[in-house]
Image 1 (cartoon, one colour):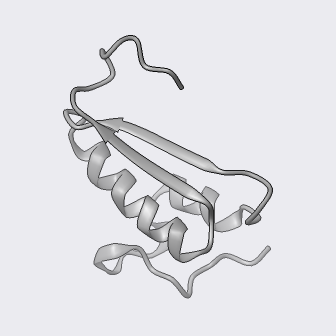
Image 2: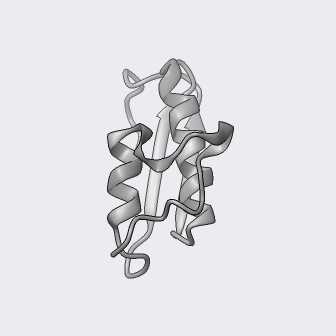
Length: 79
């Protein structure tokens, strides 16, 4: 599958700016749902996943993003 260079990430970044964008660009759409969960205290990871969510939604992936209060030390969450 050809990379999806026609849809840049927010802020004008291209899909090749991060390893994760490159993985998404080469993945087929369909047959699965992507669920991303991140704690609000996880620093820049929150912004990265928001940008990735926007990018993947634009590409047609079925994807959800949940930003919960706290960070990875939160216990009792079902995945």
